[in-house]
Length: 506
Image (cartoon, rainbow, N blue to C red; front, side, top):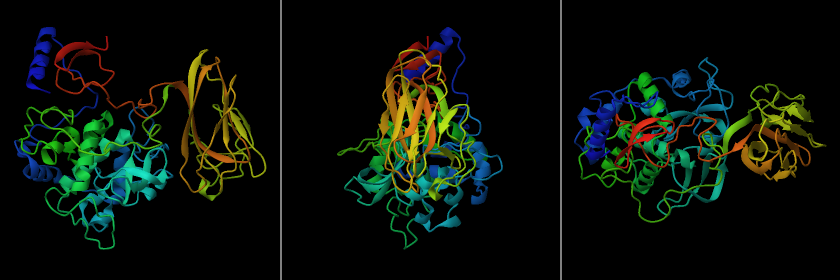
């Protein structure tokens, strides 16, 4: 925030007598926490920040699930795990154990420094996150990047394949657009906190291509511009802010690139010739504000990939009418082992089922000889609305037909999918206009069997919404409270933005 805007905010507070208002769990940077890094830039700024954040508690790798139960619960849910890597939904059990189907994933892989606790990065909460097992396995030890046309893995959130950028032609991991900035800020933290880790010390690792063992720049040149672009294009989210505070309460250090995303440009970007002034910087502020900016010349650094439209934090549904992940279906083997022959008699969401079976957190619809189906309860929707149906689906050892989705008064829409038993579920979205009141939805196999991992039905809405997991991403015009904090979309009161003071939400 410029000095003129900040002055206007203070003046507005004096005139209207309003108390500062912000997020319930907004950033609370301790006074003086970054004092030793003030007025520095480039290598000096990076080294100073590294000293600050390296001073933290080191946990055992085995204890992380106990800490995740405090740091990685989705706000407003009943112990749901926030997963950057998969559309699947998991829940903490409260006993320090990984949920079935989930494990821990190193954003910057441990093999890059030789493996294990050679570096404290091995169990750092800012580098190790809860993850879907299949996505973790597919991500392997590949670096961040943009995937081209050769795709090896796509679950609707995690994409793995050959790099589309000429500077690096190996296999890369690409997160959804909504999480690209999050991962960039994780890389910045690791490169700053663990600059002197033995990157590339394992001669058997072919993918130590992202970092180099030196104080500066640590991140290799082919990746720096891409991360700066992602940092600028995908601003700090409410979730990052909340988790930063939670990790600070546990680990006793912070990710400075969440507190001040602009720092990346003063270390690696266009502002390395300028000293960073913490007293004037906006907490969680725009990554491209002031003299900083994550510029990239040439190509398409931002990127996007199929499947990003529906990810763990996104949905095309504005008002949820039915949301079932079949987590209560406990009998049956994992779908990679054949599912189960134990019949599923339905539930409150799907009271009518035909040839449907339990498959351990999923359901199998149909058999080896005949099709099956399930029909929802009446949805209670108004006449004429547009409904969206989102479904996670995969086939048997081969795809034995399609899945037809139909709604009262509409011809069925066929979902064509390619995933089979050992693959992650594919997420497919069907939108139907002018639906009848109190409609029901039927999902039926066209021939034999398939597996379903979730079904969500609701009123169609903006695909950038962060429901049902967490409505926490701030897009578009950036506004601030009178205290200088970024204001959430739900904020009502006197706000500051683009050089003016105005009432927001009235």
